[in-house]
Image 1 (tube, one colour):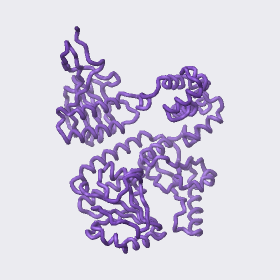
Image 2 (spheres, rainbow, N blue to C red):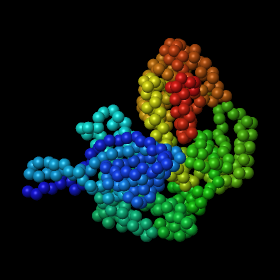
Image 3 (cartoon, one colour):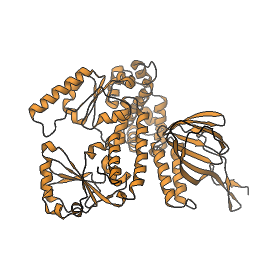
Image 4 (tube, rainbow, N blue to C red):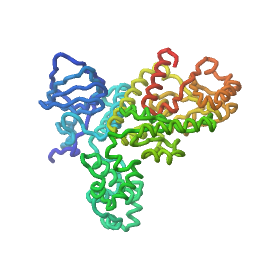
Amino acid sequence: MSARPLADHPFYLFSSVHKRRLSASPTVPVRQLRANMICFVTRGSGAILINGALHRIEPFELYFLGPGMVVETVVNLEPIEYYAVVFEPVTIIKTKGQFSIYGSPTFPPTFYPGRIPLSSTQHAFAQMLSLYEESRKKPAADDFSLRLRLEELLHTLTSDLSEQEQQRDTRIDQSITHMRKHLSEKITLNLLADAAGLSPSSFSRLFRKATGILPNDFLTRLRIDEAKKRLTQADSRVKEVSAEVGFSNEFYFSRTFHRIVGVSPSIYIKRRQLRIAVASSLGFRDNFAAIGVTPVVTVDLFRYPWMNDEEYEQLYATQMNEIREARPDLIVGDHYHLEVREQLKQISPTVLFDFPAWDWRVNQMKLAELVNREREAEQVITRLDLRLHEVRSELKSTLGKESITIMQVNHRAIGIQGTCDHPLNEMLYSKLEFTPGNPVPDHMWRIEMAPELMPCLETDRLFIQQHHLRAGSDKIFTRLQETPSWKAMDVVKNNRVQLIPNWFLMSWTPAGRDHILDSLLSLHRGSAI
């Protein structure tokens, strides 16, 4: 019996994962690599010469380097910091019942020397951080879990299919392939069902089970996604793009595009140059500032609980006039401005977001798409994920060993923040891995109650924000301090109650999340927040 490989692709053995730093040098070091390496650059920039070919080095990018490559690295003024995962492809051969392991030069054909062109690097970086942290906890030798994590990382890098797509019925995949190839043509439900060998009703039912939406809705979204790509090309015209993606009626295309994307195709074409006005109670200005966009004007037209008619009418008149004078191309607002949507639309095209998911990353990316800054938004998110990792490591020696509880006191009641379903909860309890106090709900984002009903909290630190002071939250706070539960709590007796700004709002924006991390570091280092 001849020897044959156990599989038609090599296995990947994990060797090590390191965090490295390269500083600028008057001489350019030259070295020949001995291993396969995936690198993720977190800071700094420069250039690398690989086998005579020049590649730029940029932050938040992944790079592949392989054995035998001769590399020369030039570092700009700021040092380059990066994570490097080192591994070895091997092939397992079975000969006469015996297994042998051989080093393999084979690597996935989608990988070439230099940058790995991913549409998004966030998930891959999170996997690399997880691999790095786990490798610090236990020896890499004989650690099967590290090899599995490596396989997951490589799968992320080499696969263009989502897990949902991989598990779909092949007939559904074939119908989607047909949609993609014939977007400009008339595609009917009967045609797709015939191609799949199913009745129209059975096909629709199977398609919805696999994708979550009906075939016609899926086709529409494919067409709009393709239209978005074509509208960003030079000299694109709405009428031509409409026909190219299968819409026979330009007006219907524009209306459908606006419904799905939030803006008209004509505005989408010039989104990089748009003059934006922001109408937000949720800090949208900071979301735009994080990606290098400065709104021409920022207003907040929400009527807060403390405002009487005269005060609000004056605020409304003043801020609406500011928007008119700014003459924006587009007004971007949040759901707190739904009541004034029609008035805003009379000034400029208006898009108001009522985000279905309480995920600040999703919201940041949606806002970035409006102004063609998706790449910048990805970098902001990755930078914050990296900082969370670094801050968590520093806090572990002090605050990381303590339980914490977050409370908001408003003009009606007190609220104890839970561990899920809110960016602040996710940041503190998931990313920073704080231990929740008791009782902190683990199945909801917050519970509210009258101050007299608050139980005696068991927590090492209590963070309190007084919300809407002008509406009377100070009176609720006074009632809270007079309760037997408050006076009996060790956290109060030990003077470990901290008044904080509005972390709940700040957790939605990059600048706000940075501020929260700075505050926790100040507390860790012995300073007041």
